[in-house]
Image (cartoon, rainbow, N blue to C red):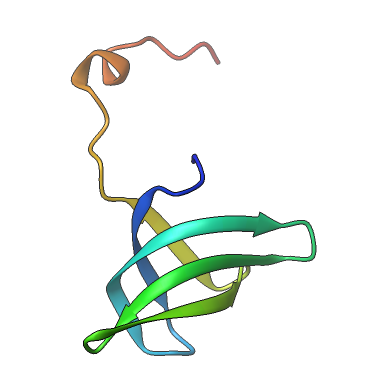
Length: 71
């Protein structure tokens, strides 16, 4: 996932399910740095990679889904 991508954030610890945000950095120390929309404000937030799911808001093009995966 590219940096500065708009993402949906899921994190059970914060109780965030599909929160909106922007991925700023993926730290080698084990966290995502995101701008998380919380309420009506944007907060810079460090979320542990373990326990956090980020989903890109931009849908993949269908041509990439038709590719055959070699196993």
